[in-house]
Image (cartoon, rainbow, N blue to C red; front, side):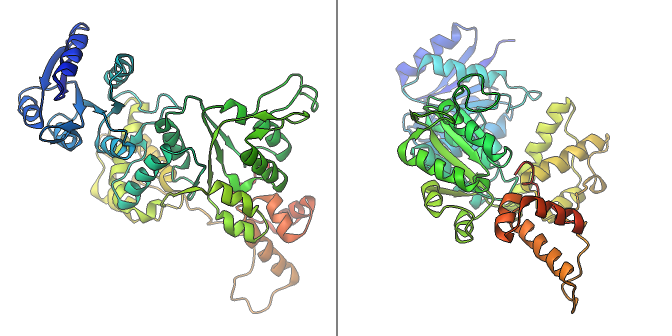
Length: 451
């Protein structure tokens, strides 16, 4: 079946060149030189793909996007702009554009964008390539999310260090990947979770090691800094970094060099640093858990992601997108969502944010039948329901053990279950803390994996 292309471009020579190029590929091409001409053609044609110029004689091309998708929801739209305004491009894609490219148009770049757009089908995932996220993943039309989009654009234009703050599940890594994608940096996006690797191995992962540095080091190994050369290094859960590594990271950022473990030489590095945390690093610095100078070094550009409960107006859009994504993965149609089910979703507090929403919807989809998703299929996990066996706050008299148990639990909650940090606050050893956790049956947070 012949695919139809609509080119909306006021530059006659460019539109002619594009017409000849895509007609040679067997496509049926229509051309409009203004928004008015485009709307006229859209009323009688149904293009598979639209190449849309931003600057048109009678207005901005991006303002056509909602109308194009209203008339033809399945059409894919590629924005073309001669202005390197990433904020505008990101907002256009949030409106529904599939991709954007900059002018002057390079045939190879355009062809790759067209192939990618035309390869999209309702059964395909927009997240097929992990290192190339789509701005559609950053779903929301609330003021808070529009501000995040602007900050992504501004951050992409700079090489300054970025600190992304927000609760777990708000999409910090998606934001980091988007900043990298739109920055134009030639190197890779390399990510590492600072809370998921024990301290002595984390140093090697970050800075690399030389052969013989430790048992099992049978060859030289480049660290994540070197792997991200000319690209972006994403340091997730940076607040969990142990103090010795904080000092080494600060030196690496200041000197733009790293020293591999076991080596006696430094290696120059050129990686843009983006860090993320669910903690207040400056409060952690005041508590003696984080270096204040490193916090300032990381917090050059700060992007604060709002929790889902603070942008409830985005929930219907998120539900639509996440249900569609889950249905595509299961290769089944998207069932309708009953009003009572949506009301239930809107009223929930969402402690796990977007990640929790996706989990709830996926579970509902698995159980849904032909009738759609009803309110009784929307089920939430009760987090924190099982409290430790401590006395209530109003208990007038408590034993020393009860007081100790309550205090240790508060410290664990404060550190998110990070045992190393908890030990420093409590002034006890790790084995002592483990014994007390078992003795009092205390709740340990998710940070306690190998911390």
